[in-house]
Image 1 (cartoon, rainbow, N blue to C red):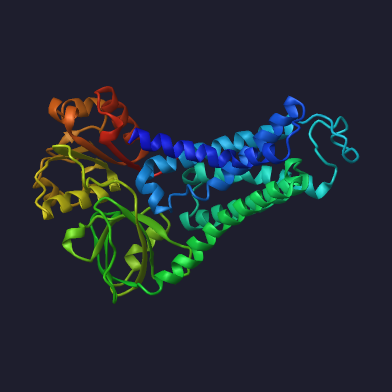
Image 2 (image 1 turned 45 degrees about the vertical axis):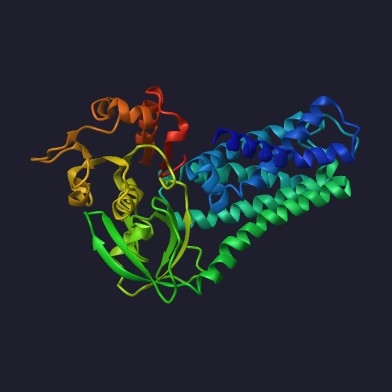
Length: 436
């Protein structure tokens, strides 16, 4: 596992550095070290931004090999690194012989050329990039609809890529060589084509495989079970614990889609089941959905699956609606009569938020509630180190597989505890709700 990650990271670093290597190979004759450093930062920032189109979690082969949680963490880290490099990039340039002077740059500390259009596109991109990241990182705090954010995120990303391409070709020293310029053009086109593939070609293909809402059930005050049945096709191949993007009551070509973990078991048949919590966007309209409504499914994604693992037992830890993929894994293990030992830890703020309590009570499940109602017989508190100390034994910590899904604070606390207790990374499968 570590070797595979090392190889993938090495290949990624090589891909990011490829424009720089091309430039040095074809152009040579490096400038002053500070100017060269400014160029290096600018080129690396652009290359990292283009790579983000492939690190969005929608490449099944990559996310399955690396893991969705690791993929999205890496996506976030690269975004911050690209922003840092881009912001530092202009401050390393000294005077250059090209063109006249800008009124705001009489010492020629920032400009490579005096052509306004060449500089302007870079400046606009430099303004949009922080906006893109801020809107993503603080989306929940800003409290705007998920669908709006997705549209805006894609539009801003495409605009930044095109602006940076123009800036690179018009203001970049190394891009004056036709081969270096061609490489930047190819990389940008590939990044934009990934959007065309995702938002046009995939939906066109989905039109031939529609689904129908077969069941809709309110599980708690804010949580629903939505079930989809394939209409005229065999359904979806997936592994227990994975997730899919779904559109309900919308055109296949609509970009308004939402990701939800699959709570059903592949062994139970073609019907897909999702446990969904109302959060104010599409989910707030669940009560209006009627049985028979057309839906479309894109999946399956993610690597939160215990298939093929050799550990003697599995500990499934969920917080809130993170129970959805845990239910899928649990149901698959029961359907296939999996011989591995099993333990479930399920945390909620209130007992009324617990879903499928009767089903979970049939296995070794510890219910954890922060604000218990009268008569609650589980564990009072939160899923943290103190709680886990009294819940897990040495055999489980030494040899079992741990599967975690829930809100970020719970995940951080559980991961930290397990690693302190000697659980290695290869025995930890994680999936967060967000990656801020």
